[in-house]
Image (cartoon, rainbow, N blue to C red):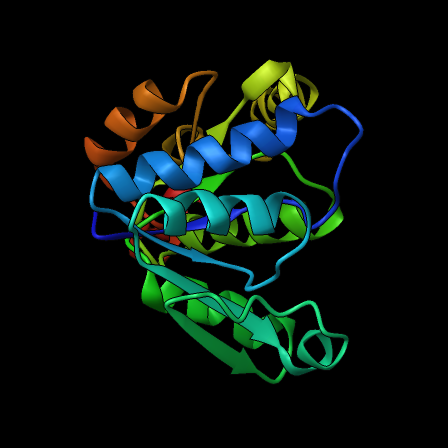
Length: 193
């Protein structure tokens, strides 16, 4: 993987572990020669991911909607800052520019990005790994809900492994690198659906 889209929050939680985690993720990717594609902001976990990667000499491509640039949250220190019209174009750019997706803690926007990456993988719009760093057990409930959807029959057996979740970054990156695409809905027969 040459570049990974990192999905995370623009908020700054009171618990300093989250900012430290984000900085570590950025630095680790840079040290491994993996470029970071992210939301282009300088605040919260987003800014920490970028700072960590840049401090370690990594490539950082920020993709930010016009409305957020004008609100002065754009990170002008990025290797490249791409301005797009809105959120849909932003997620499309993440998919186009990256070889995989890595979600760390975040809020509603982060969930939107994660679920779109999962949905697009399920359908067959991309065949890239979708990683979820479950640091500090942050995503325990989300992973339980995902299992519940599968057990209830709303996630097909062929798609139950799309989310690659691990609590440790090194293990998660290794599993993402070993990712083998599943059969997407576009390639399934009606009897498989």
